[in-house]
Amino acid sequence: MERRARGDRDADDGGTLGLAAFVAEHGEALEYDLMRMTRYTLDDLGGALPERALLAFVRHLPLESATVAETDARGGWSITQHLLATLIEAVEALDWHFMCSRVKSGHSKPEKPRPIPRPGVDSDAGRRIGRDPIPVSDFDDWYYGGDR
Image 1: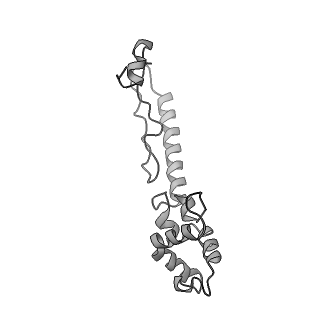
Image 2: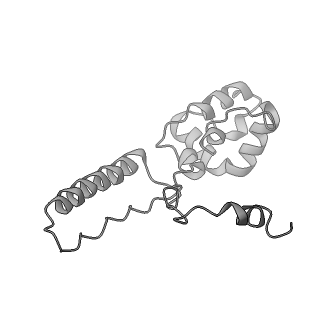
Image 3: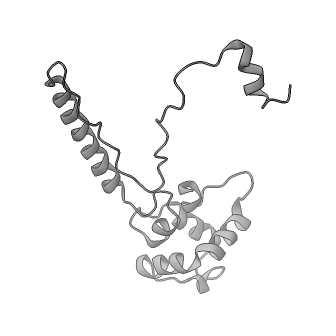
C-alpha cells in the first residue's frame, strides 16, 4: 500500500490512469498537501501544474504528509511509534529472560510477555499451530480434505 501512496507504477496501474485513480481516491489529502507545500491546487493540473510534476510530488511525499497518513499501511503509526514499540518489546523480552534465569528449581517461570498490537502488523505471524507431525497414513486425507 505504501508503494501506491508514493505513486509507484505497477503493471496494472501506471501513468495517467494510475494517477487519476489515486487523485479520485485521495484527492482531498493530496490537495491539502499541495496547498501546504506548494502554491498549487488540483485545479492547476494540466495547466501550471503538469501531470509529471504531480506524479513526482506524490512519489516523494514526506512521511508526515496527509496523503501518506491516509494511504499508509502502518495504520497511522509513525515509524518512530513502531520503533518505540519494538524497543519496548525487546526490553520486556530481555527482562523475561533474566527473570527466567533466576527461577529456582520447582518454581514456575513467569509468563512470556505479549507483543504490543500494531496496526498493519499481523500478530499471528510467529504463532505455531500444532505440535506433532501428521502420521504418513493420515497425510493424504488431511492434505486433500478427506476427498480421496
